[in-house]
Amino acid sequence: MKTSKLTFTPLTLAACLLLANLFVAIASAADTPSPSTAAQALIDENGLRVSDTPARELPGWRKPDKVVAWLLNPEHLSALQSVAPGARIVAVDSASQAAEEVKDAQVMIGACNPD
Image (cartoon, rainbow, N blue to C red):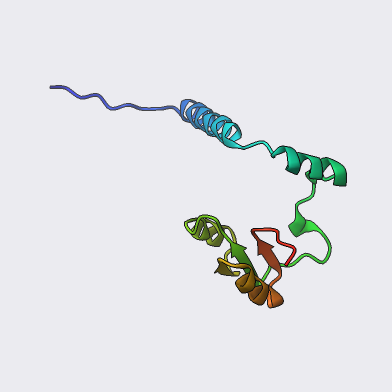
C-alpha cells in the first residue's frame, strides 16, 4: 500500500492555524456565562466596566505575594497557581479560616460574607 505524505505551504499552514484559533475563540466566547440578574444590577449600579488598561499597568500595582482562595471546587487551585506564578495561594474552606489567612494577603478570591 502506497502512503502519501501531506505537505503544507507556509501560507496554507498559517491559514489552518488561524482557523483553529478562530474556532477556539468562538467556543470560548460561547462558554462565557452571563452575569446573574443580581450581579448585573451590581455592575450597573456601580458603573463597573472593563478597562482598556490591564491592572498590571496601573501606577502602584505589584504582584501579590499571598492570595487567599475560597474555592467551591478544589480542582481550581492548580489553575490559579498556573496564572499566578510566584504568589503563595492559600486555599480555605470556612469564614474563620479565610478571616485568619486574609490578614497578611493582598488578594482574596471567593465568597463574600459580612463576617
